[in-house]
Image (cartoon, one colour):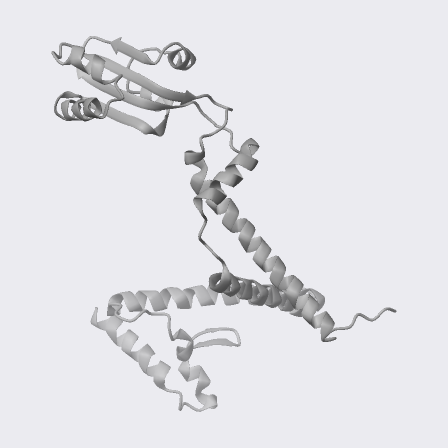
Length: 283
């Protein structure tokens, strides 16, 4: 442990020694690959503040090993590639330009993009683009309870589970919290049909389950399964808007982003054209 701390202190000391003359560069180096050197000052910022000494040493050792491996590969490529294939000036300029424009776009969006999407905008987009919103599975809204087979509450639960009266709903929730083995109250939320059928250990056809009636009751050797279907929608049908709200908001925001960037580019071109900032020479 003491040995690692000493190494770390030595490296930090070297890092701070900017007064070392150039002719002693080799002595100030921490690694070499042929005629390429890695200096102590190159290690600045590698170790975050507050890092334990032993961890700091390991991070520095990892960085140095990575540098050595990279330099070996770079020098191998330089030695074996013809000079014309080592000229990346144009590619680097294009890459730099792309990064600059991208970063400016990010800053422009941060400053000027309106990220508020109103409910009426969501509704309008949903109404105008319903072909985009197809269900990938059957979904249902309703209620489900699982009770022990001989529960004395079964007759009462049968009545309450099908009622839309507020008092009955509250009573049902209270009874289920104390007596049900499982309860789902999804009057306003959608659930895949498979999510319900998985709770019932019996072979059930999903299509028949949905289309025949609203109330279903199943029984096995230990439990009663009571399901009330308030509403259902089938696969490939129109997805309910409430399931698509976040998706629609993302679409609207992406459209705004594209429009804002396009307008910026158009304004820049128009202004440059008016002020004669550029010329295109025909030859």
